[in-house]
Length: 237
Image (cartoon, rainbow, N blue to C red):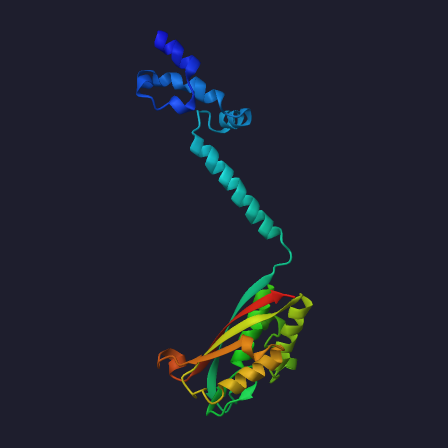
């Protein structure tokens, strides 16, 4: 019993690993409790109703820190940058002009659409609107509105750019990919890119344009449709 008395009076967390005290492991509970904060003990009693481990305390602290960071991010009304993605696809039919990026590209088929069917500009507009958290192009410029019948898609781009500036942003960079089997766009890519840069009011160095075939797979590869993807980065002015 002399050893047990000594254990209560000299115990500290540093000496809990001593083999000498293994036989009296149950006596370690009171000393451990004495080093915990009263608030922690109250929370433990109410929620766990058992003696908690130190690892639970650490996990709770980490969870609070993460939650505070997330809340702070959500509360921010003005982001330093915004990213948007746009996608568009049109059916190709004989008797329509093929307009890409505001440029008339010679081809036996063109885009069937309510406006001029410019798949690239429609895609770019959706990317800008998406970055701003606004409705898509079909909601702002509905295809059942007669005033947009045959309208040049440059009108849509100018409105999207106006909304972008109104929100206090400018273009950081833009990357677009056109997908079509025919015609080959190599002779037109630079003209299209420069025209797109001018419509956006951006330096050509921050506007990138790529073109790919669809390896003769599905409607794109069979020259029955054309598609485009755009990713845009908007920077706070």
